[in-house]
Length: 266
Image (cartoon, rainbow, N blue to C red; front, side):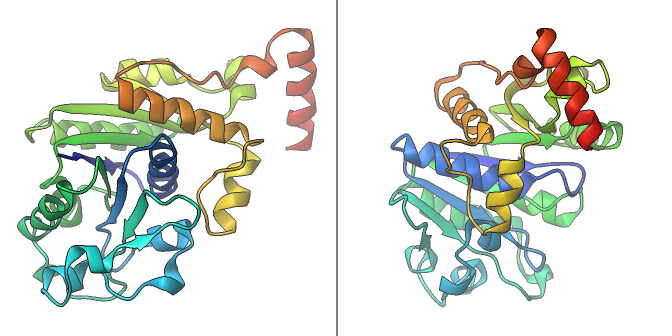
């Protein structure tokens, strides 16, 4: 049976959907069968991040309304045969979709896949509860900013009321140069503040913006962000706690020079 993991955040704009897409891609490249489930109905963009928006025939609402079977609505990701996306609906009366509906879709897919990653709407409104209802695990995504951490803490308190087997943390958009210079809070401190196990640190890298704008998951070997996602996927799959070091290139004499140059360019 699949691991059913909801990927959530307290605040919008922290990169949750991009994390979902790229984590799914890394797990699939490790040999797992993965499906990404977009339940942000009406405000969905997982199909755009994954670059499959022009290939959608059916969506999750069609599955719920029995217009098609779950497998018919899946879109296979180009270049990664074991990665699929179940897209959301762009316009629909979301009041007609319940947590039970989503849970049933997840249960149907669970017999086929190893991982179901559920892209959850930001915030703690009805859409959040609808997405969390069918999950057995959760990953909270935040950035190293006080407002995002504060909102993540609110989400964690609500997730603790659900019967989750585990709640883990990903810190996204981390600036290694700022952490090395003592100008940004580090991921370990955020993990301690939220009382969550840290399984991933994703750098604020030019590569992530470039590949996201092209409508696809980060798969370029040269991008450091790809290495960070590989570490994240390994931790999730194997229960390890390796942390990608965003500060390595900014330590020492040459690191100080790099930090100074980066500060001037920014």
